[in-house]
Length: 584
Image 1 (cartoon, rainbow, N blue to C red):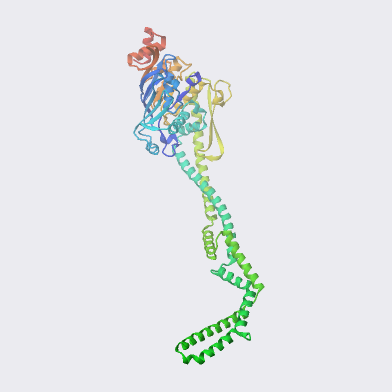
Image 2 (cartoon, rainbow, N blue to C red):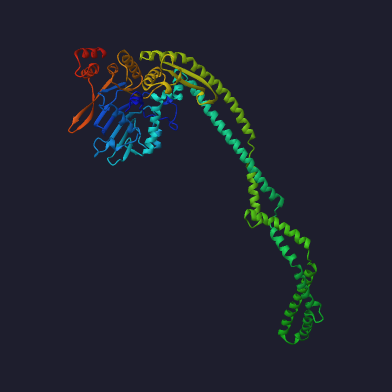
């Protein structure tokens, strides 16, 4: 682990997620967080270790290279970091890292239900790495895939980014700190509720405008289609009637010739068939009284002649009434062409089906409401809501500006205590043109590490150690205002000693009164502030070197602090000094 990373606040451990989409403001959901226990098996040069953390300040000390940073690497595994078989202590066995977290106050039930994981107030997260390189993850003994684990750990990583040393570069975190000091929580919550509704109304307005535009296009299209139907004026049964009439008119000459010829042959010719049949009938009449069957036959014959005479009259009537009418044929054809065109366009075969389509189009058209009134109402509501938001944003901005000067002074005072007398922090409050979820302010922390230095963004001018101390100072100032999660500091004391280290220890101890803090340190002035003190050391086991972690009791603490003061074995004066530092 490089020196810069050692100088940074490495992580903030807390399994705590918001209720909705797991991304709500930390101000609304964090409570006193706590990692209770860490169990490591077969990782790096750790064979098997268990660490139980204090709910206040846990100090971890040990010789350089003893394996303190390995503990943090193990924590990274259960937070979804990449696993590597090179991390196995014994490459024939699997590696297990397990963390136990207290989550009773975090409303995690919804998250567990969504992912079908058994819920308990103690969340046990376990990561296993097999010799073959296969990685498995468990939450409360329920297997979870890497994607789910990474989703969980992404929220943890967000927490790390929001509260580790890199956060101080983040303008969102900077704004959160100023809001906490300005006691803007209630007002900001009120603003954000209103802003959320404002955004919803804007989204609704955009949707209605698009809907109105689309509706106008649809109305135009439906109206165009209906215009064709209405101009056609469809009549049930008309198609069959017209097709029949067209067939008759188209064949009028053949009908007239055929029926006229039949009429002539049957009735008008010199030897017409009707005349010959009548003569035969007269002959039958003359003999019908001479044979009983002839009378019956004669009656049947007379009926046939009468039927034939009726047919002849019909032939004559139809022949005389039938005339070829080119104008009427054209008129019918044009009308049928209108009907056929609509049928082909809508892929149907009857006028009845066309009439059903027309009724459906008319129903759709009547269903499009005029949205202009609703659009105007929302636009008016948005203007009123926007005006209210600007007023609230102005109140937020004024409260932020009111705390900036005192915050800067307090940071300068704490930096002075940490041997950075000439370092200065400047908080810029810039007004944005548009409203956002926090008002209209943009907060920028600028830093000048030395006398006469220009104020520039922190990441551009501050070293790792300066960032660490600045972070410690700012967090100690907002600790009572922002409910921070567990804080882990990895050798934040690099480069300091004596009275400066003692003051740094006091700051850490003050933080631990409100939040769980874990600090890896080489400085005795910080080590003496521990509520729980662990010592990391190496020893040879067979042909291997292993890392062990031991909880120090009082006498062991005195010896360890004395060793940190003078060396091993510690001198009598160092032991005496250690007792004084421990206030014994």
